[in-house]
Every structure is written in structure tokens, then in C-alpha cells.
Image 1 (cartoon, rainbow, N blue to C red):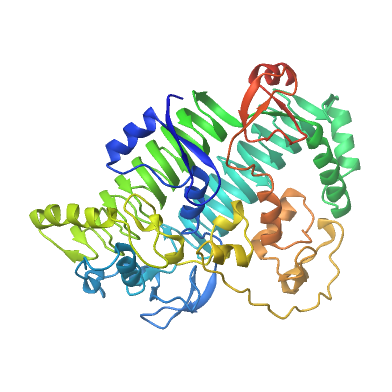
Image 2: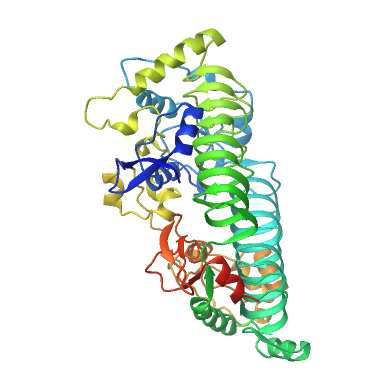
Length: 560
């Protein structure tokens, strides 16, 4: 690891190490060492990202009713995407001089509350309005953080897939339901950490399998039930005898399989493809990636969560690009990106928010398109910009006196959570770092009170088997068995259940998503040993986790 020295986090009791390679990266990015530990830095970034909020409100420019990730009480204007990208307004009109008598972040927050924001983050979509943080979708609904999909519904991190529903972290799949961290699936149901499988249900850690049911850890198998080999005739007889089109059967098999999974072997970190010199979890084709999670096709990264095609990045979340530090939700990420959110393409941006379309050499800007040499949305010449910027950074390096000002307000730190456009419980931070209202406020975040809607009693009895369900269900208001909230079945959804032979769910999409999120392990590594041979490991499963966690050697000996 080549540790140079240890530091104590300024936010929590944790200690963290600064290594020789860390120091070289900070020097390359021209930033000081961080004051917070990796987890606190990550939580702070996630507080600026919200993917699943969909509110109804009016466009601040046209008064048109729109969907938005910001509710009607947001302190800044919100424009419909097409209007935001149009030429009827200019973010440069909100430019302001930098005031050396005031903290930078105070001035940036002031600018944030004036510049219009896009209602949703969408690009090149067709008939996919109810989505966010997405691109290249066609006929998709309630899909988030997803790209290049057709006819997909109720999912997060779905890539290059067709006709899929209720999934989390899948790619190149078709006719796939309730699957997690899987790829290249066809006609699969509840497939966990599996790849290149077809015509299977309730499988975990299976590869190159077909016609398997209630199985774990298989390789290249067919016609297996609970890891026991059957003939084709025996297998098909069982599946016909106990159809999962029945809600009773489906629920029973799922409960049994969850128990089977508890006793299954788990590799100390989950990965697909080739993994070279990398640590973390849910990695696909990575090289020299340290403590990274849910990334693919990436190299030379550290502390990156949710990314693809990344190179030479540290402390980034939901990005695609090269040379980035403390940046969140930038796909593609500006080259040489420091402390940015929601900014796409371009280069050499620092402390920018929602700067699009190839902006370059900008500092502290919001909502710009194809601009260069700007500070706080004010235009400068190249010479003026290069003279002023070092003075601003030097101003930001000086400790700020007064209540509410701390090291987190200095240059080299990400935006303070207090100026996020989202409340903590609206943001992705709540998914990985749950806090109570009191805890969130004490840590400087905002909190949004939930609006309790009147619940319409469910009068309709859902048939047990999908074969008994008529189109009448499309007119009915259902009540979620988990949350008590109302939800409805949409026509595309009903068509999918019928095609896949699946029962109507008794819980709403959000409750189902929360259940899938439980399969996401923590995004931190712990010291523990292999359950089989005792080899010391760095794993997402901590020492108190009762699951069987194997090193790679023991794991490969156990699967087949």
C-alpha cells in the first residue's frame, strides 16, 4: 500500500491512510489531501444526487405541467428539458463578480438559487418520460440510471437490455425479471450474480447454464433443480407441476431460495470478466482499481462507485471518463474534472454544476452550455481567467471564521451538504448511509417531510394465477402489502407478466426496489478470513457476517 501517513476524519471517528500513489494523484490534480475519510466523502457526494424522485410541478418558464426531480417548493427555477436546452434564456445573464470578502460556497449557493435547472436528466429518449439519469431509452418506464434500453420498466442501472422489469445492475439482458448484478441473461427470473444463462429461475452465481431452477454456483449445467441433475423430461414435468405463474408457488419458491442463498458460498468479492489487481465488489473487467464498487471496463481508479469506461479517477460516483476527482453524476465526465456534479463532456471544470455541451476552463459555474473561461457564470478573457483563478483558490485556502464555517468550506473539499438541491432523504445518500431526520440535520443536511396521501381501499381481489387475470386489473387501484400505499398495474407490465408467466406482485414498485437494494452489499471493505482455509481477505462481508465467504482458490473448488 506504501502508506505515507494516517489521518483522522474531520467528520467521524475513522482513520484513513494517504498512500504514495494518493499523493501523486493529488499533485496531478493540484488539490490538497482530503480532510474526510473515503466513506464520508462518498456520502457527501451522494447527497447531491437523486435518481428516483418524480414530482409533478410546473415549468418555471412556460407554466406547463411537467415531471421533475425537484418539487414545486425548490428555491431555484426549474425548466422543462427542451426549454432548458433552447435559446430563449442564457445562464450567463446570472453571472456575478467574485467577492473576496465572502466565502466561495456562499456565493455559489446564491448563484445556484438563481440559475434555472433541468427538470430531469434525460438524453435521446423516445416515449420514456417517467425516467431520470438516463439516455437512449425507448418505451421505458420508471427506469433510473440506465442507458440504451427498450421496453424496460422499474429498474436501476440497466444497460443495453430489452423487455426487462424489476432489475438492479444488469446489462445485455432480455426477458429478465427481478435479477441483480447479472449480464447476458435471456428469459430468467430472480437471477442473482449470474451471467450467460437462459430459461432459468431462482439462480445465484450460475454461469453458462440453461433450464436451471433453485440452483447456486453451477457452471455449464442444464436441467438442474436445487443443484441436482435431472433429465429433460423430469425437469419439465416438475416445472409444469409447480408453475410460478401462481402467486402462491412463486412466493413459496422465493422464500425457499432466499434460505438456500444463506447457506451458499460467496466469493469475497463479486466480479464478472477479467479482474486484474482490483478490490471492491460488483466489478466487471477492471484493472488496478482499488476499493471500487459497481464499475465496469475501468482501470487505475480508487474509491469509485457506479461507473463505466473510467480511467485515472478517484472519489467519483456515477461517472464515465478520464482524470476525475470528487465528481458525481457526470456521464460523460469532463476531462480533468474536479468537484463537479451533473456536468457532461468538456474539460478542465472545477466546482461546476449542470454545465453541458463541451464547456471548458470554467470555475464555480452553473447551467452553462459550450462556454469557456467563466467564473460564477461571468465571462472572462483567457488572460483574465488565468490571472483571477489562482487568487480565488488562494482565497478559498484560508480558514473561514464564524459559525457554520469549517474545513469543509475550503478549497479541495466537495460542495458542503448544506447547499445540496436535495434533502438528505431525497438523495441517494439515504440508500447507503441511512440517517434519521435529527441525525441528518445535525450533520448539516436538509430534510423533506413526506406528504402522506389518502389511501384508497383495495376492493379488487387479485387472482392467484396470471392466467386468471383479465384486463380489468388495469382499471383497479391496488394497495401495497409492504407500505400501505396505492399503486396500479400498467398495460406494458401486464403484458410482461403474461409473456413471462409471472403472477401480479402484491407490493408497489418502490417497495420492490427497496427489497432489491438489500442485495447491495456495503460499499466498504473489511478485514476477515476465508471460511474454508483461513486466508486473510479484504471483503465487503465483515467478520460478523454469518455467510460462507471463500477466497478465490476455495471458491473455484466449490463451484461447478
